[in-house]
Length: 244
Image: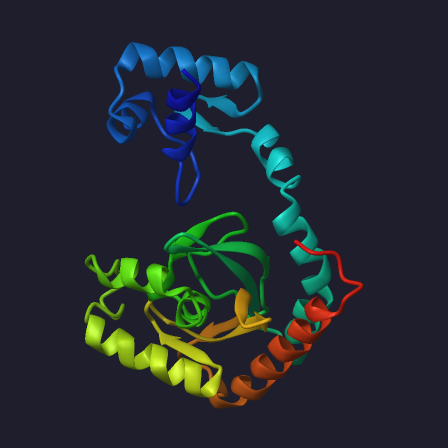
């Protein structure tokens, strides 16, 4: 029954929000009576909240998520650097970590421009369709890269990279320059500059800045994103920094 309860919670990926009972049944493939019973139990536990038209994730899930050491420790160290990046650009800033074939957003600071991007703290998006995801993928272990290329690339917009050969060339360029870019691949009207945070040869995280396509200055973002990713990496590599 625990596994079925997790299925119901996972049905709210990737955007959360409210789902009707019928939608939960559709996404989980479980019998309607089972979904209803488990959803009500999850409400009692605070993991879901009952709404007029269905259910949405509860605050207890948020509180439990904040206990994850890997995210909490990394975010605590990274936050001053993200704030510096925000102050330098006044644009939307992200901190992401890789989980399987997705990037999971550990932090987000919304910029003055208010660009409409699908990212949210705790949310996940495909590695191949986001700037920070591609920065992480470029330095991912070979088995992860092979898994991404062994199946159709997941596209979020008409501009998302669907050609494995083109993506492979992008990853080579990212490894050469240390910077990733995406143009309207995660959301229309938004471009992104990202960089991996490399510690002991491993991309432990990625940072990015997202701006509207009609705003000048994308080229100017590259050195500041790269510089802050390197500064964060040096701090994380220090022997007195708590390991995540």
